[in-house]
Length: 171
Picture 1: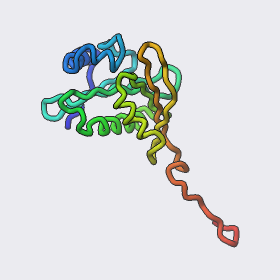
Picture 2: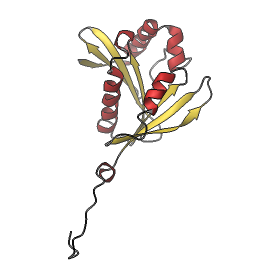
Picture 3: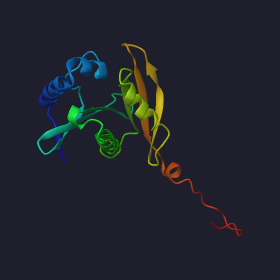
Picture 4: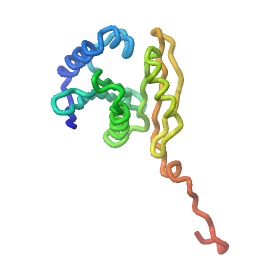
């Protein structure tokens, strides 16, 4: 598998191509009315390949105020339902916490994408090194979006075994 970071000009062209592959209507139902769109300042986008075939794209962009990275993902139709979502989701989490050293990764899912929301909801509260939380929803623009956040657990949260004092008061 090969990963390529795209330039600003390449991003918009790739998103147009992705939109054609899934259908412009589906693109806007899943990502919003203004897609394809230009990348925003600070946004970085990677394209993942298997041989010459595009598998997915991942977008990560820092929040302008908080230590949060906003995440978006697209999987080309021929690679959907083949575990690639999990693979690139984990890749984005690692990149968020290692590259940006952010406190959290956030994302929104269109209510049109109910299967993806169900899959994500099955992950809420699970995980050892990170924890996913459902944080709410927006109802506008219609049909609305479910919002999630992934936070990095502290070492204490990752390893719940506590030190125990022996009878002498020594640890």
